[in-house]
Amino acid sequence: MALSRDQVQKAIAIVAADPACQKVISNPSHQEGTVATIAAVLFGGAIEWRLLEKCGLAGWIRNAIAGPAAIVGIISEQRYQDLICGGITAVTCTAINKRIATIPNLKDVEGAFREPGGWAHYATLLRMMDNTEYVLDWHKTLNIQDPWVAKHADWKVAKNQAPFHDFKGFDDLPALTDAQRAIVGAWTVNVSPWTWIYRFDDQGRVKWTDPTNGMSGEGVWTWRDYAGYVELRWQSGTTEKWKLPLNPSAEKGTCVMADGEHKVMAAKTP
Image 1 (cartoon, one colour):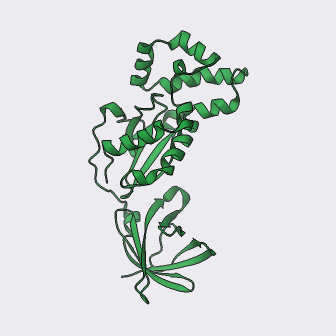
Image 2 (cartoon, one colour):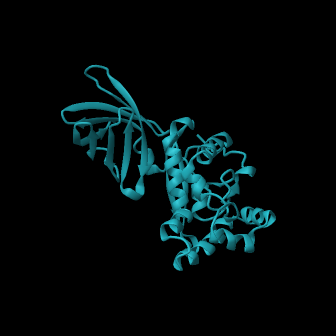
Image 3 (cartoon, helix red, strand yellow):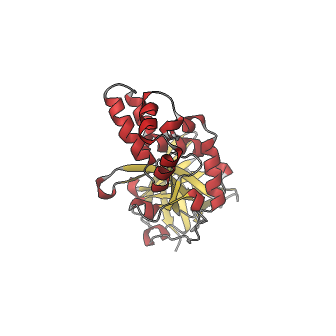
């Protein structure tokens, strides 16, 4: 499911209503204290801040003011950490995850990291049910209603990013890699003492069925290549981690249920 304007609007509404997000996503001319005074002198006019937002430099300018302020003790180090991109990413991810069910086809939210040209940066990654990934970057504008929007692959190399007010929605199709596509299909799974049939689709969904009694349940799967596993999250609250790379004949992993952790053994059905 390609990211739509309506989905981004829902994410923005969640962030805009969250007190923790409100404290860190606003330009210094809207804040109090010495840092705000300095910012007001240098960049206080509405025209200047609109230009910084348009260029995606608002957060960088605030960092340039708040960093020295933290060094000399005008603000605390913790406050500085809250204001930079990592702090903004942390609170926006938390806020959206709390209400993730209100955004259709959104599977999970986490921090995204990039370092093009040696400049480290964090922003908010949205992963859809079909495993397509997008980024909302509030640090660029410090305007809670107008983050920059991009496909994750483009954001990683700092290209093809646009403010929300210019965003019309994406129309890209699901694109699984060959390694990811290997999970799609039916698997016989043993989670001692149970044996189930799992069926994975290419939209990030998975369903289990107990062949002995016909009981079933649904969940989602997420490919976490950087962590070395595929994560399964079931509606019951049970979670699983399958090791990467996948071994279709003898896949191994762990399953965490209410009663503790169990080993997983799985084989793909030919």
